[in-house]
Image 1 (tube, rainbow, N blue to C red):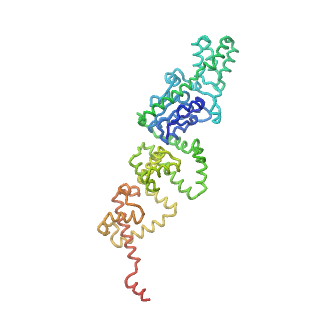
Image 2 (cartoon, helix red, strand yellow; image 1 turned 120 degrees about the horizontal axis):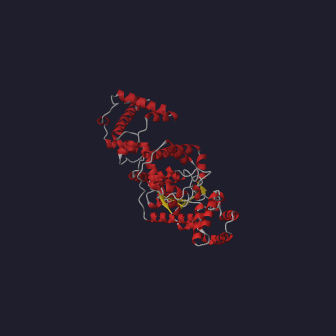
Image 3 (cartoon, helix red, strand yellow; image 1 turned 120 degrees about the vertical axis):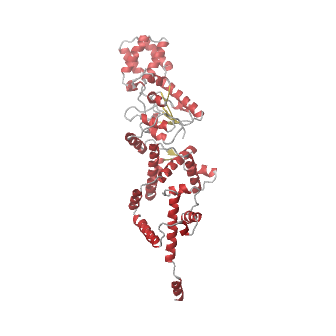
Length: 464
């Protein structure tokens, strides 16, 4: 996945053309950074975010993203606030606004808050940020348009306004009501269109440049000096974020949204049930890997990719690229899909409590079938004195036994790594698998002999 930035009213549509290699996302809300971090972008930038009506981005999801190796930047608005709070942990703050919060010159959230329009308008700002008013009035005083005392008085008036109501027009109107020099106010009104400073925009553009410089250096993953504790509150928050459809279900691929693709799946009930169960296991495996801080073995990822290519006949790069295109994936998306699949396999091969396996058989109504076969096998092999067989009892060498099971029974090549294959099948190790195959071989041979017609019976049947 490409680097991404959460941005809204601070930047204009034309500003974003300066960073074509960075994906732009709407203003950040709680859970958004966690969800984006699941795709493992090299960097995340936060400019704009929600302050009221929607829960604000949580500090811990930013700490989690950095702990996952993602570089996180902040500037201008919500990003400056969070960077000032988290820069000791490695979040990179950019710009004068960040520095003012970091150094204690600014403390109130309302300094960067604005009211803005909906996404359809490009989140157009409908009020002026207090930090922009401060900077603009400072510049006006430096240019000699207003006296320092007038500047300070105007700043007090602006600060007393609710952030929804902060505009230069309203500020100048209030100042006129309080008998501020009309000459200074008129000079300021004429100067503002060309002389006013948008400090938030300047800081946001500086952050984009900083991110681009980092990306151009092909950076190593972020390294942090803290351990993220997996608490019950964090578990609940991440579960809620993962379950949220915001910003995910409406993504468009080609001419169709993900929601419409999922609608088709849900209408095919049997397929949906199977996919849902597998997807739930994938989700739980990823959360368990996160909780354990368990790194993904790159060799395991490569093995998963090799199996995928063999399963779907993707033997050439052209065939793989075509498969990626058909599945709306890019190369980095494939990489993380394989890492996720490796996590799933690692979870599956971890010892599963036997009572849970038995309960699942009961729910599927398969318990009776498997129990009956296990009982028949045990009784038959015990009668033959072969319930705990030795290799010499089978009359077959291990290589032949493996070929019989994998090639003849499962219809697949004998794995190169028998130890890993044994664990994937749920056995403790290679020896455990081999003992089970010995019993199965002897049982099948005994069953075959028991069901085969005896010579004298066959002769009688032929005579009749």
